[in-house]
Amino acid sequence: MSRSGIFLFCLLITFISSCKQNEQQTWVVPDNPLMTKWADDIDPDEPWPLYPRPIMQRDDWANLNGMWDYSISDQKNRPDKWDGKILVPYPVESALSGVKKRPGENEYIWYKREFKIPSSWKNKRVVLNFEACDWETKVWIDNELAGEHRGGYDPFSFEITKMLNAGKKHEIIIRVWDPTSEGNQPRGKQVSNPHGIWYTPSSGIWQTVWLEPVPESYILSLYTETDIDAGKIVITPDIANLSDGLTARTRILNNGELLAEQESSGDNEIIIAIDNFELWQPGNPVLYDIEIELLKNDRITDKIKSYTGFRKISLGKTEDGFTRMLLNNEFIFQNGPLDQGFWPDGLYTPPTEEAMLYDLEMIRKMGFNMLRKHVKIENRRFYYWCDKMGLLVWQDMPNGDRHIGRDGNDIDRSDESAAQFEFELGRLIRSRYNHPSIIVWVPFNEGWGQYKTEIITDLIKKTDPTRLVNSASGWSDRGTGDILDIHHYPEPRCPEAEEDRAIVLGEFGGLGLPVHGHTWEQKNWAYENMDDSLALLRKYREFYEIVYRMAEEKGLSASVYTQITDVETETNGLLTYDREVDKMGAENLYWINTGKDESK
Image: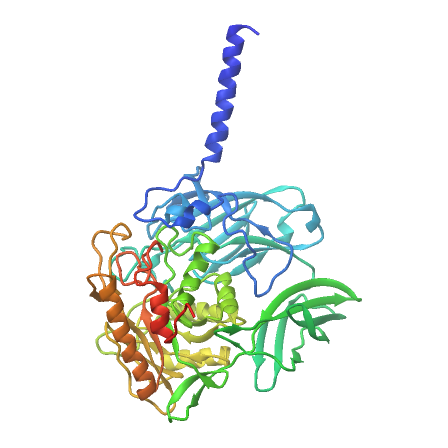
């Protein structure tokens, strides 16, 4: 080969190598005030790789997380060009998305990628699933509209079978519009102009996108309840495309041991008695596995795996005459942190499942038995781990619309706003119904979007009669629901005991300690700042001496401390925002919260 030929060959190899390198480097994390250590563990080819719906699991599925093309545009029509790559499922405003841009209220986020259906899915129906996308989502497959959805926190699905051909590459296009605080939809702490207790938005896809093959008739959903007084499990399946001759075979197992088996027809209610069952509770979160097979002519056509826990949440009087929250017909004092679920690098989306688990493990290590998930809804794996770890969950509905005015009356919500709130509230309850860890629904927090309180409380009770309702946490009590909840900062306070409702301290504390090198901004705040970790620990201990005295003497059922981590400019967390610093030491908090020495 001549010198010129060798030079051209080397130039070609360099060009190919450079192209490959650029192709591999499509995910670049922009500069960010804080990052977590888990950001380095993300695989951009398949972030969040585990099955996203463990409460109803099938073996076969395909994960669509990873690198997508994206564009931010004010045009409603498909963009002519794409701005670059985005890592799904991280919100577009987050550093981990690789984009870190805030769309305007009149702009759309566009996503594009290709996919193929495995040949093994031939003759199967194919369902496209979104675990969460904020807020208005429209989806096209090969330029044909597959469906649209409004809701920022709930999982939704489209069957796309007729749009697909096995072995062919298909294109999926997604358009998302999120007005954030310029709209009246549920959006929690997200605002267009973050400040104080209001934080950076999380728009677009922020939980897993995935495909699942299903048969002609398949289990669309199921609702599971346990009755600890009667010793039975009640399962109500919803079967899509129910046909004659279809039967359901249900098995209940414990650690692989078959406890009961029953066969029933169609989508009839399944009632199975279990002898000598163990109760699910903090410290002993026993779960029973459920397997359901659909059979047609003795052939298995669909199979799902689920689980449940025997537990009961109710109100009742204790021997001291106070009406309290009861777990399994007994009173245990519920104590947990406010958990807002924000991350410096992923915003609404934890960097990895391990990162999400870290928060839950720290909550347990600190001696808490509960958490209040504050105006945010987490992915379904979060509640799976709460089920497994025995953490009680108070679940807030994300707020939206306006605040209650000075007159103190419930707001007048427009028909459109009310319909959207009630739709998303119903989706929250139904999609998380089977998780034993969730014991309380909280529709309103501090008067945000609060309207027709008694009607909304009754709506929740009709949708889910198995759990308690905390109608209005903090302010604007209307005498409804099962709980009277006050907020008081920083020191704890206790409401007067009531005959028909339990009393709780839904928020208190907020003691602050900014840690140099671990703050979101130089300017930060807390309800009361401490000089150092020792002063913080002393004040925390003083507060909990008061809390436990109120539990014993005044009938307090529960307390919620603000909060598990710092969030943006708030530095009142037990952990720093990046989760690098445990400000007081988990073992010290364990002793204060439980009265026990963790080392023993």
